[in-house]
Each structure stands twice: as C-alpha cells, then as structure tokens.
Length: 141
Image (cartoon, rainbow, N blue to C red; front, top):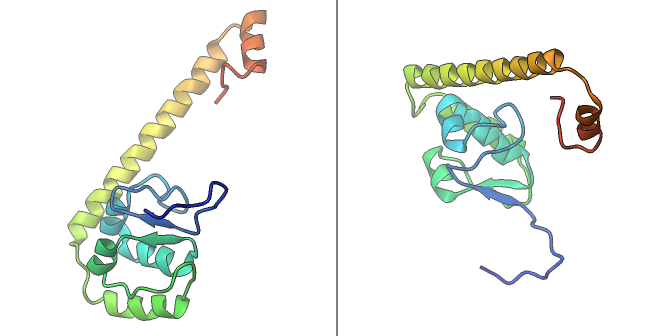
C-alpha cells in the first residue's frame, strides 16, 4: 500500500462483496446481497457515484466496463442496462428470497423500536433517570 501523507483524504472507496454501502436504498445490506437482489443498483452506484468503486471481481461478474475513478458516466450505465437485462445471473426465485429476507429484517427492526418506545412510556421518571438522559447516558430512541 502506498504511503499517504498524514492529513490526506481518500479519493474514493473500493467495495468488496462483504462491504456494506451505508447509503441509498440498500444501506444496510452487503454488496453480495445487493447483487442478488438488484444488480442494476450496483452498476448505477458505480457509474453515478464519483467516490465509490468496486473490486475487479464484482465488475467482471456484472460485466461492467471500468471507468476512470473518481468520475462518473451515466451514458455507460444506460448502455450496460440494455445489455444486462437479457443476461441476468440470478433466477427470479433467488431475488425473491433476498427480498423476503430484507422485509423480515425490517419487521424485526420495527418490532424492536416499538419495544423501546413501550419501555420508555412505562418508565417512571425520577431525578436520576432524567439526569442520565441529559448527560447522554440513556437514549430515548
């Protein structure tokens, strides 16, 4: 790895299959899961986000034409999309399975959030508990 000056900023991020994007529609899923669910989203991110790139294995799997990064090229994305629609690497059943998994994960998150709210409503307020909220030790979420 090249030696970087101490105050340098990374120009872009290279994601692997285990990486989590952390933004957008699939912010909480790994790149591998997104490829199975909606491979065109990975291509869209690659061609439209200037500071995001993907490992060569992912680009080869999806047959994405590499571009100079940092940079973007939406014309290549439109061309890729027309070509890719005919050669989808995953079956419809596999994509539906991952959509099902994502929906269940969202339901679990919602249930946990509701549980936290119910615990907060049932809590008796006293001086020590309010003080811990003010000091940031207890979260209301």
